[in-house]
Amino acid sequence: MRARLGALALYGAVAVVLTWPLCLHLTTQVLDDGTLDAFQFVWNLWWTRRALLDLHTSPFTTHSLFFPDGVNLFWHTLSFTTGLLSSPFRLLGDDMRAAVAAENGMAVFATVATATLGALLAREVCGHEGAAALAGLLLVAHPFHVRQLHTANVASLYWLLAALLGWSRLHGRRSLSTVAVLVLVVVALFFAHHEYVLMAVALLGYDLVYRLLRGGREGEPAWPGGALASLVLSLGAVAASVAFLGGSPPERPPFHVVVWNSADLTGLATPPWLRAAPAQFLGALYLGSAPLVLGVVAQVIAARQATRWNVAGLLCLLAALGPVLRLGPPTVEFLRASEHAAPDQLGWPLPYRLAYELIPGVATGRSPWRWVGAAHVCLAMAAACGMAGLAQRLARAGVWGTRLTVAGGMLVAGVSLAEALPHRLDLTRATAPSGYEVVRADTGGGAVLDLPSGLRRLTLGLYSSLYMAYQTEHRHPLVEGTVARLPATQRYVFQRRDFRLVEHPEIAYVVLHRPLFRHVYPVAPSIRLAREARREGELVFRDAELRVYRLRSSPPFSPAAR
Image 1 (tube, helix red, strand yellow):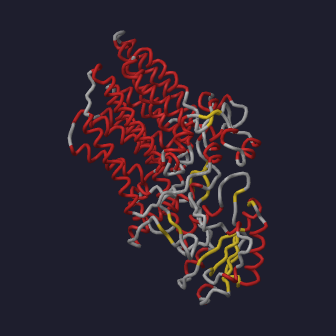
Image 2: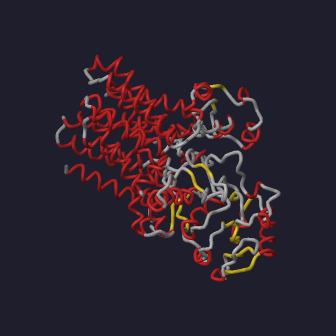
Image 3: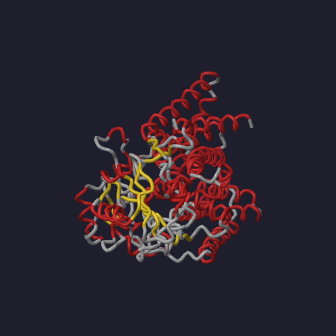
């Protein structure tokens, strides 16, 4: 028990280090990679809490975005499960500061939960407490984890670990209660991140086949009937949840988008610090020096335990490469050509392409590279087997063996942290401009259009993500929003050439974020609408950053808004 408490304290300290200095700014700044995704997740978690606790309605549809029509959020990156876990943050208040605190709190929680559940799973695999604790550290001291802390859905890898842990205990305990828990975990995983469910089902199915083929020879416990029933019940529970909550199947993402979001061979094997230019996905593809070396060591000295995990890891990496084989990250020329090229012209086909065409669950995913997360879990388990084998051999050498074991553990931890720290996310200011106090004070209703509308230049981030976070402060519905799977019937304002403010009386306020106009693409639509707002509205707030206009075309005009 003392060792586990020590490991938990270690993981808490690592969470602080990997997010430093976030702990000093928990309510005023967020981790972000420049795409503004963190602000979208501030809203996602807030909306889940608000819908359930305040409005007592389903969080999977909303009229707070794309007002007045609203939008379906079922296949959006809502991370409903994480939103539920963030419910205690509602006690801090209902403004943007509380919403930012929830986003940051769940980022820290993701680190501790991933490391803890990883250590528990590794202990089941290798039976060595110290090796298991280091395996948990390997899972979080890694660019994949560090670069995804601002996205609650991708950071929820701990639910995949919980499913693998439940599966492992299912075979040993053979109880209906364990089956029920596993089914609930898989459902929670689905609502945390849709793509992780496919990884979980693939790994559990692979493990069942492995146990049937090899487990009997190795004396490993297996419960084929209960395991198969668990898989069927889990998939049935997910399907029932989708049907009950009205989640119609999403459109299959375009083939070229899937290709863009696939891993490349050099990215998987080349340390980011050896590249002359930043790697695709900012180094998150690299498997890590310590896990790679320890995985090879495990295959040599503990092949019986490590083979299962190394093979599973290789299969996950094959999936991460996506539908076609690429040796290196895509060039700008490749990105431009792929949008109009036939699939056969993009590269050598891989098994993922067939799965993309035939299996609905695969077709809903847009980012094959995220299979690197599942591969990293498998490699960490193989590394735990290797570390346990080395520790057992060194233990025979007495005191010097113990010292070497401790030194080796410190080396593994040091190397992993050294590779992860350069990939820490930057802190970005996350406070609502004071001009929104005027909007919040107006209880007459009406939507808000924030300008500029469009992409943050040189990124794929939409400014509507930032405005979603501001909505947690002023509470008025938005004309736009950032939705992962935007219906074909909805378009962003900058995409609508015929959009006129006077034709939309539901819009009460237009908020001009003046510094952002220099960084938006395209800029012309926002400039046109800003000019119209000045003609058709009354200025109710101004400072160096903001201009807030109340449109005369939106009745009634509230004097309190002046």
